[in-house]
Length: 186
Ligand SMILES: CC(C)(COP(=O)(O)OP(=O)(O)OC[C@H]1O[C@@H](n2cnc3c(N)ncnc32)[C@H](O)[C@@H]1OP(=O)(O)O)[C@@H](O)C(=O)NCCC(=O)NCCS
Image 1: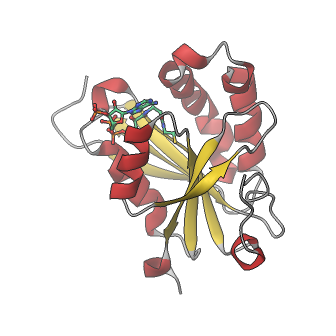
Image 2: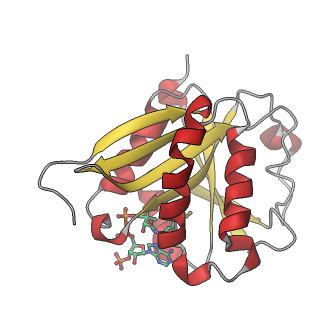
């Protein structure tokens, strides 16, 4: 149950993944419990994606702890030069929009909060803390169009839906959302 005081937010870099991997995987398993039988959402595939994302330069996670227990987290990494992030767009983007130079775009891969802490503003706090120190021009994330309320939530945080994409052959089609990060740019 949530404590009376606001959860504490802790930032981790790629060299700390081994220490926090069990926490990240356990929360994923709880939050995505109903979808774990779908191979794409299985714990194994999540762990593979996590390990792959965290091997990228600029990977960071922010984990919220409430009275010592993890309540939610987000993680993100910079898209590498020549990234295929935009390749799955059903309507291809103009070349200039899809160009990645290794420092232009932050990809937010995961954001999740355990049920008792939903609707408390914790997700927004985690999200803003993760973005606060970043120097990329823009941040992008994918959200299932079948979750319109989550999409509305991201729009209320400044994201715009720029079109659908299917990043992997066995993944759902996702709405691709983008928000400027210029306030942080050097
Ligand atoms: C997305 C999330 C971090 C937002 O947390 P929050 O800011 O506390 O917001 P809420 O949980 O109150 O969600 C906002 C609305 O979206 C709905 N929603 C949240 N996750 C949803 C999901 N996976 N599928 C469908 N609807 C969902 C909620 O029911 C809520 O609707 P309501 O206001 O009618 O109750 C949290 O809901 C979560 O962890 N969801 C599960 C994981 C997830 O879907 N992450 C996003 C991947 S892009």
